[in-house]
Length: 197
Image (tube, rainbow, N blue to C red; front, side):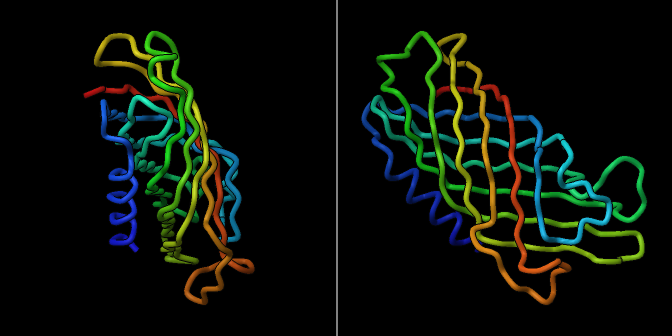
C-alpha cells in the first residue's frame, strides 16, 4: 500500500505543468473533527475535536492545474480527556491530490483559491492499557477539500485548508474490532505557512 501511495504521488506530481511552475512547501496544523467510524471507540472520542499536524508539498503552474502530496497526523484520535480504556492512539492520512486553482496572473497579489482531491492511505491505531480492542488498521482512502493561499512576500505566505477524509470502501476484517463493515471518516481544518520556491 505504501509503495502504491508513493507511486501515485510521483505520477500526480509529474503530471503537473512544469512551465513556470513553483513549489509550495507547507507545514500545517489545525483540528480534526466530526469523526465517524464503525471501529470500536471505547471512549467515544472520534467525533470530538483533536489537534493535528502535517504538511503538503505542491507543484503549481501558471495555469489552473497542479498536484500535491498531503499528509496529516492526529494523535489521540481515539482518546477523550483522562478516560482509561485507551492510552495511545492516532489517525494518519497520506494522499496524492490533483489541484485545481485560479490562474496565477489573476491572483498574484491576493488570495489564490483552490480545490483538491485524490486518493491514498488512511491509518488508524489505538492501544489500551489491558490491550482490549486494539486497533491497527490501514485502508485505501480519499480526500476532497479546498481553501486559499495568500502570499505575504515573494517567498512566504499562508494556506487555509478545509478537507473531508474517508476510507474508500466499507471493509470486512475479522482482525479489526468493528461494529459491522469497517469505515472511518473525518473533517480537518488547517492553517499552514507556505514556502514558495
